[in-house]
Amino acid sequence: MNAKSHLPDITSQPNSLNARPLQWVGMEGVSLPLHILNNKGEQIHTHAKAGIFVSLNKANAKGIHMSRLYLLLNEQLANKPLNGQILTTLLKNMLSSQQGLSLSAKVDLAFELVINKPALLSNQSGFQAYPVAISKTITDGVINTQLSLTIPYSSTCPCSAALSRQALSDAVAEQFSEQQLDKSVLLEWLTSQQGSVATPHSQRSYAYINMSLQGEQLPDLPTLIKQMEEAIGTPVQTAVKREDEQAFAKLNAENLLFCEDAARRLKHALEQKTDIYDYSFKVEHQESLHAHNAVVYDQKFPQ
Image 1 (cartoon, rainbow, N blue to C red):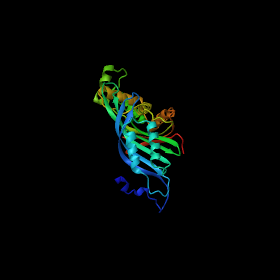
Image 2 (image 1 turned 90 degrees about the vertical axis):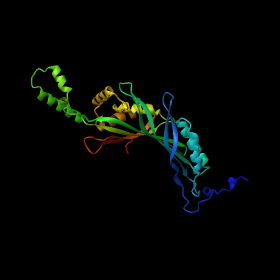
Image 3 (image 1 turned 180 degrees about the horizontal axis):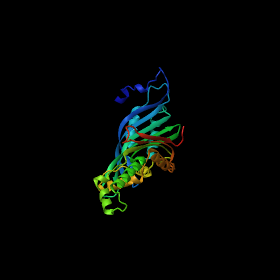
Image 4 (image 1 turned 135 degrees about the vertical axis):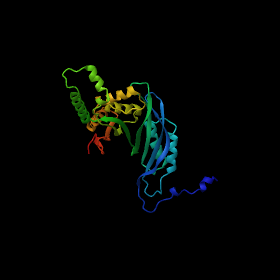
């Protein structure tokens, strides 16, 4: 006789007290290696924290078969590139593993996608991590996929920029009272420490984006991140040389942003994406002038 048959299985015993169904039962914070494909077919390796759940619809069942969920998660995600079909297959296998206990299944993945980004002008490059979360559910045969991204960027205040220009104009008028200016003298003064009359305030800012995806496929995440950065216009940098830093300063001057400006740019970009049928986002400018943040919340279908 198999020794395994002598081991007690408490979960298979009926639950006579408080017999009620439960929406989600499972595990969260499960460590998992994850492999993301970019549009070149290259794999980006990262580490995820996973949550894996099923509903407990059989009211008098003691509990679900939890260890089966853990094994399925490792078998189907740990060694294969992530895509929509693999997640759907995982959800269906999760339901099958419960042998009639469950009608719904859900998997959550939270990880940082590390992307090698080139500098603006020089031959430098560096790595930047982007927080990503994916949640996929199946309920009564209906599949839903949610994707969340965090995009950091730089924002320079248009009001502060205008006031800085005015301060510089006033300083030039005070320094050079004659009608005809010597160009070389003016340029020398502008590039001296005296020429730094005022600088506009800028800050690291964030776009927190939540998307409901259309169809089975997951988007190419590095490409989607780049598209959102380009829509806003002032992505943060990694390794830089002086020419890159100057180019970044020019980029900010060309893209002066109130939080409303960044939000409208982001909203326009999301509206163009046919694979996104719903979205919500928060834009957050972590003010350097104030001790509070300037924010915008928006969503496609206001409630």
